[in-house]
Structures are given as structure tokens and as C-alpha cells.
Picture 1: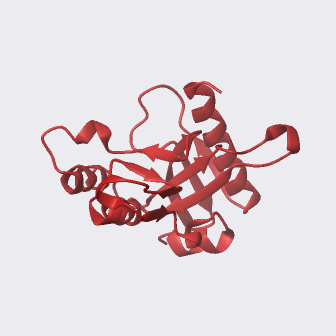
Picture 2 (picture 1 turned 90 degrees about the vertical axis):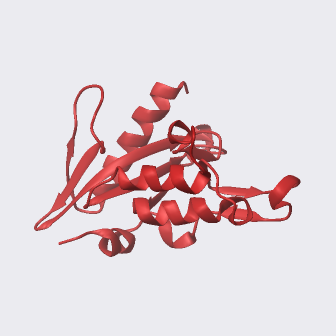
Length: 165
């Protein structure tokens, strides 16, 4: 897939999962969407969802904020750009074989949770990319493993943990 196809597929897949979980979905239309890509509503429950797709094992979230900032400062800047009732859907296509009927892996987290995860990346030195799984073979974080928490896996229970009434 090219990057546009990856974005469309990630957003569509996230919308499908929320609909399957019983939520009505409203997708923003057009370019330059502010902060979120879709809204999921079920009764009085409502959440804005920012969708990030990846084909390489990680989601580059803070590179554009890194100039003249430390990793931690860039991460904080990214986190603070998000308002309440916004969660992030991380969709990973790496290693997914569509010919075999496999589905992408999807994770849900608040921007604050992702920020804390990214600050602990690279052995606590921070990084601009949230990686699904990465073991450092050299450098400052040799031997450290970054791995998305299993509790972030998409499920109805995870949605319920994240939804603000």
C-alpha cells in the first residue's frame, strides 16, 4: 500500500471495529482534519478517535515537534495538542498477509498513555516513534525491548475503559 492507502485502510478498519462493537460512526470528510478522524457514539457514550496506520512496525507521532526540543518535550507537545474525549487507534499492517485472510492488529490508547510509553522507549530515553515491538541491538538502549502493552488491544472492554461519559 502507499501511505494514502494505509491511512484509508486504517481509518476504515477502526470504523468497522467500533461499528462491530455497537457504536455509530461519524467520519470527518476532507483534508486537514482537526485532531481526530472519526467519532464513535453509543447511547450517551462518545469518543473522538485519531487513527494512525503503519506498515513498518511503528507510528511516527512526534518527529515534527522534535526540532529544538528534547524527546520528552516533543512528546509532551504532541500529547497536549489533544483535547478531552480523544483516543488514538494504532493500526499495524506489518506482517499481515491479506492473502491468508489475516487482519491488522489494532490498539487503543489515550494520548497520555502513548506519551508515557514513548518516554519510556529506548530504555527510558524517549523516542519519536511508538513501536509495536522493537529490541535494541546496539546504542544507548542495548537489550531494551519496546512493546505496546497488551491491554491496549482493541476490545469492547478496552473501549469501556477509555470512554468518558
